[in-house]
Image 1 (cartoon, one colour):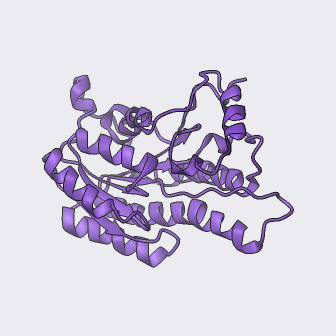
Image 2: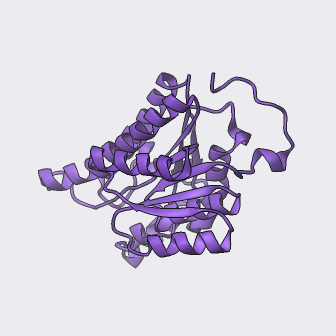
Length: 263
């Protein structure tokens, strides 16, 4: 059983990913790149899965040289079930196994709720919910054969509150769906893998570039920490989720938001 008691180990060993193979969707930039970096620094072999970030293959080469670990990039569209499944299978073929999948790919857009077109609404759901599920599903089939594995979803604080002043009902709904998906799969797949969720607050990545200075100021006023996070500040929580340090944790949602969801 996946959650059976592991052998006792010192803290450095618990967080050491040496010998583990990890894959991250949306791993070419933003949060995904920070996560990939953390895993490479911890000794893991890394598969960067990307769709549009053309720098990803170069990043993989850099990681291989810099961290003295194997790293490869795979292009795949998470919204196409067969495509992401083929990419996961290619990772397993190339690396020999898969220990951790991070379903991180996501998009955001702002529209008034009464003005969404069906295409705009569906695009958010296709990437953020369907894509996350297809990614986890493909990995779970591998994990079930192996008898072990670990799924980490990227959700958002938007899963548990309504962000203001922006209008993003579709994004909020999609991330709430990811959170409930993680909890449901944690129970269903408990015999062969763990499933957890990370919910970041406002992180300084490209996804925030649409915001005006006025909107940014309003967001800052809502955050007790009075600042946005840098992507590197998520490295620790994703490492914890992927490592043996969290061996008894499944179905959890770890919020990293500078206190944003507390007031």
